[in-house]
Image (cartoon, rainbow, N blue to C red; front, side):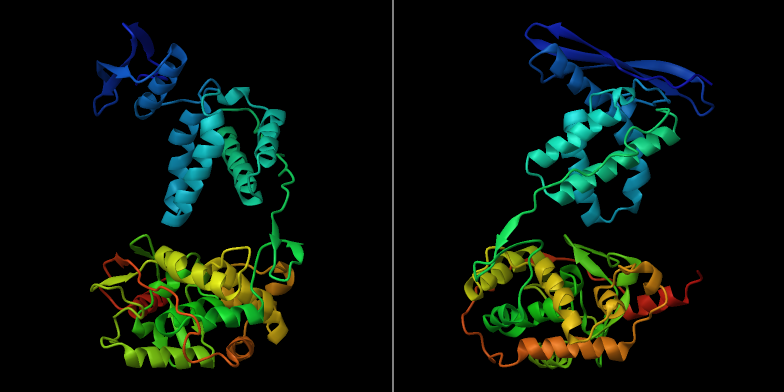
Length: 419
């Protein structure tokens, strides 16, 4: 069987344009060479260097690379690294991860041979990102991806030793956020109890209920908009799926597939909303869109309802988002008796902050519900029945196709399935 070859092709000038040429080797079912097919294409390039870069991108699908340090980093990532990772990423994670890899790694470093990298060079690249004002999250993810990429290159014998093994995350200056009382602090934003009450006071009906679920039960937006009425039973919501960009999927993590206790004030709001819905049968959406089998778009809701309500009610220097509401619950929950395990159960994280102790402590539904009721009652005390300030709430629907079976039945099947 012939050995795999690294196809690089060549470029030539044709008048004022550049043309790329390469051969594709075709094998039969037994692995023997049958023929070589010649390809050529006019390249949109201004000079020879740019033409070579364009040709290298075209040749990626035709290359069957072997362990060789001369392989460009872009080719290794797209042929050897991403196929191993993409299958594990959900759609939301995939878009973010591919964006960081493309912008922070492939564009500045993609044409360099994988054997030419060393630790100081990679560290300087990370330091440059930090100096340019990128967030700690971007720099941290870039560092993590570089470690994974070069660990895989070492595993596949493209390099003798990973140069990214001991990379340090450079210091990133934290963003300063000014609170309404002009007190300056650093960190991630959240709302006070009074601020959250004012935000809820600007909303009513469906919009207030959505924000209550996000802030008083710490649900993620995709989980809220994917809810159907059969997931609501007595004092519990069954979190079984989520919707993201018109696609239904399982929740973010295995721990997110759970039964979530609901505070009394939120249950009362849910019951009132159900009585107002003309088609509130088991498999219908709790928050339907304007057309049948559609749900609200979380980004439209955030831009047209949530953020304006935060500006009108609180006037914060930061945007009120679903992430801020979820962080608000986690910040105030300890004040109302929630311990580490109760917070972990409501947020539905896979591992606690104190892993050694957390493996022994278990969440008890009564304690979880007590803490949630305490926080919800404090927020909703004195909350007006109707909105004090109307907020525009017309949303574009997001057309989706609901699951053909009951989500509760699906959870029962998952529970009965063998490990």
